[in-house]
Amino acid sequence: MNIHEYQAKELLSKFGIGVPTGYPALTVEEAVEAAKKLPGPLYVVKAQIHAGGRGKGKFKELGPDAKGGVRLAKSIGDVESDAREMLGNTLVTVQTGEAGKQVNRLYVTDGVDIAKEYYLSMLVDRATGRIAMIVSTEGGMDIETVAHETPEKITTVTIDPATGFMPHHGRAVAFALKLEGQLAKAAQKLAKQLYDAFLALDCAMLEINPLVETEGGELLVLDTKMSFDSNALYRHPDVEAMRDETEEDPMEVEASKYDLAYIKLDGNIGCMVNGAGLAMATMDIIKLNGAFPANFLDVGGGATTEKVTAAFKIILSDPAVEGILVNIFGGIMKCDIIADGIVAAAKEVNLSVPLVVRLEGTNVEKGKEILANSGLPIVPADDLGDAARKIVSQVKEAA
Image 1 (tube, rainbow, N blue to C red):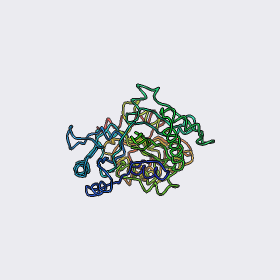
Image 2 (image 1 turned 90 degrees about the vertical axis):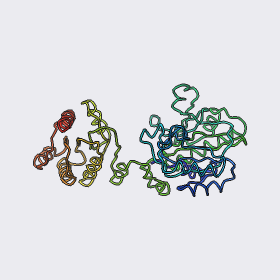
Image 3 (image 1 turned 180 degrees about the horizontal axis):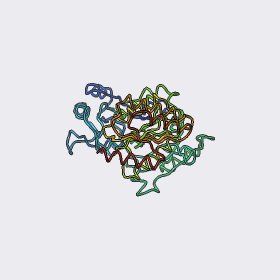
Image 4 (image 1 turned 120 degrees about the horizontal axis):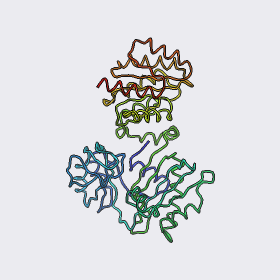
């Protein structure tokens, strides 16, 4: 789960981490009131969307010469005009794609006199089973560009959860950022605070870009992105309450209500599979046969009739779907029960596109018999390769 910048800063401030003073705003009037609470004379007006590259982004409605989604305002009047331009319009960045995202809220913060910018992020390194803290002196830039062109300017500090954050980790961060004296001590303290926040909140990723050194000799988090392990949200109802469903794909939101792992893709073959690995293999073989998957959808090992029905409805809500491939291995759940669910779901949603079903596992013959006697135009498949060839062929014939 992702949250907005202002929400992330609110959480970080609870761990004693320095952030510029700022206030969220949903309307132009709220943005003006937010600016009036700040000392000025410089203000920063930031579009709040779940995507990076806001400063370099462009608003669809404002033309190519308009300012982006992060603006420096020199008066409260500028804050008002910027807010009026940004709210309700669509911001396109390198991370949103051409569709962009509508700006529904802003974050008005105090201006900061910046002496130097740095980069710092944390994530779980699955290869080592440790938390990785990635730091660079090249803050404010696309870290992907830095990694490609000057990888020597990126340092990774790994932290073993068995020992936790140690003083030498903080020193390594300060050294990588080439800080000395009081700033080095401040960086060591900040690194420990960030580690504590990352662990306590069950974060999946925490990125600060830029982390800035001010003219006054402070380290401040100027911009941050934060995401969380969705499986741990039950431990953090306060964090879960920050979820902004308007920033998410409506079909993915609906899928989460039924504990379905669903991600929309750009193809035309809807996929319903149980197991992430099998789902990946299914998408690969669809592409191998000359078509493209419309989604990743894992119904899990305990697929029920309700789940299968919900999955069908979600797949069919995508107007790009021209056919559905169901690929189920009946291990925990028996194939005949799965077949009953498929038939019930197909009838309920009034299926109007080709449907190919491949079943394997416990009671597979009973499952195939149920499908054959359903009276529905369900095309059975013997194996995964056969299933992919049949659904691609069916879609082409129906076109």
